[in-house]
Amino acid sequence: MSHPPRRNAKLSDATLTTVAGRNPETNFGIVNPPVYHASTILYPNAADFEARRGKYSYGRRATPTIDALEEAICAMEGGYGTRLTPSGLAAISTALLSFAKSGDHVLMADTVYQPTRHFCDSVLKRLGIDVEYYDPLLGADVAGLFRPNTSVIFTESPGSQTFEMQDIPAISAVAKAASILTMIDNTWASPLFFKPFSHGVDISIQAATKYIVGHSDVMMGSITTNEACWKTLFDGHGAMGQAAGPNDIYLALRGIRTLDVRLQRHMASGLEIAEWLSQRPEVTKVLHPARPDHPGHDIWKRDFLGASGLFSVILAPCGKPALHAFLDSLTLFGLGYSWGGYESLVIPFDAASSRTATSWREDGPALRFHIGLEDPADLIADLAKGFAAMQDAS
Ligand SMILES: *Cc1c(COP(=O)(O)O)cnc(C)c1O
Image 1 (cartoon, rainbow, N blue to C red):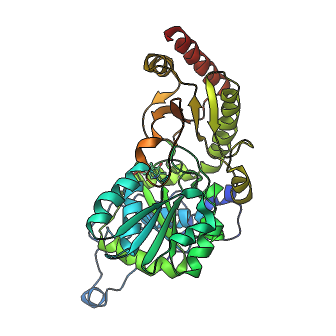
Image 2 (cartoon, rainbow, N blue to C red; image 1 turned 45 degrees about the horizontal axis):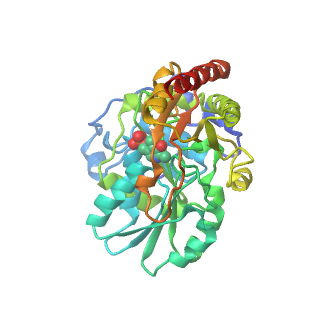
Image 3 (cartoon, rainbow, N blue to C red; image 1 turned 135 degrees about the vertical axis):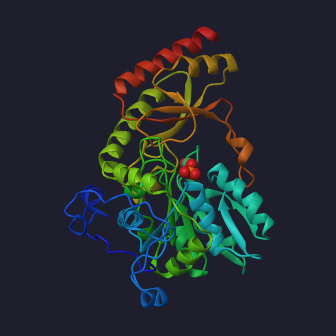
């Protein structure tokens, strides 16, 4: 259907997570929506077929299961309409391909998620779209990079892995004045801790794989737009044949019901562990926007409603054997990509290799932590064990 479903305005986020997208009255009173597995959807007669009458026409386009998750995410992001994709990266590529055309100039934050960058440097460039990376800290000064053919400015705040905070209201204001669309990858904050449409953003993307799903078992993405962008996004998403699977959608819906309580715990434990890490002699810098020592802290405090459990640290320079000894001795922190699940994770990263508009100058190794739902005391004990192993290997 081309019109977004009803929205639950004016409820607090904690309440929204429990009610958004649920319609038990249309489903025998059953609390959760059914999982509709559908390709063909039958018409009752030839006249209805000919007139394409009916709420649902084909499984790729919409089912009550798809509607439920789209409605829930849309209500939490505060947008007009939402479409789902089978991964977060598919949401990014679908949004960009729906709005940028050959000959356009697209501005991308230099600190975007690395696969977003790869998509731009491969597919967008091949289509004749001029992609320019910009310093995420430019704020309103990014207007100096606008050209007559600039169609989209893409933001991600905080920046992937390195946590630079972007001044989204300032960027979206200058973009709007120049008729340029502002997109945000809003995955770090989830729809609960940053409300993109209240800050002038036109299109918000979630890697729902992360906090919305929350259990490390499903790939899912969403694209939410304001009213002005809805028809173009709806058409682009449909034309590209994007469709997420019903079982995965159901798991994402289940994840959403606990999003608020999980995020509160991720935030509290993340801050506690970031503070503990900041006191360690092995750590030279903690990159966490909710800490007062972070350069983007004022922006975070002004615009955000909370902090998730993802942050990075820079270690004092050490050899690879010491770093590997640290990582290998951890038992509660898994070593792997993605984040947003109930379990803690850590990965080493090299930010210098994926920047062109800015430079990354840190001497020591960088680690990105995702703090899960474990007892922070156990996590701290695990990290202490890691630092002891690091010492032994030095
Ligand atoms: C993981 C991630 C994505 C991509 O999501 P997938 O579901 O893994 O495709 C996009 N943006 C950010 C910030 C992410 O962390």
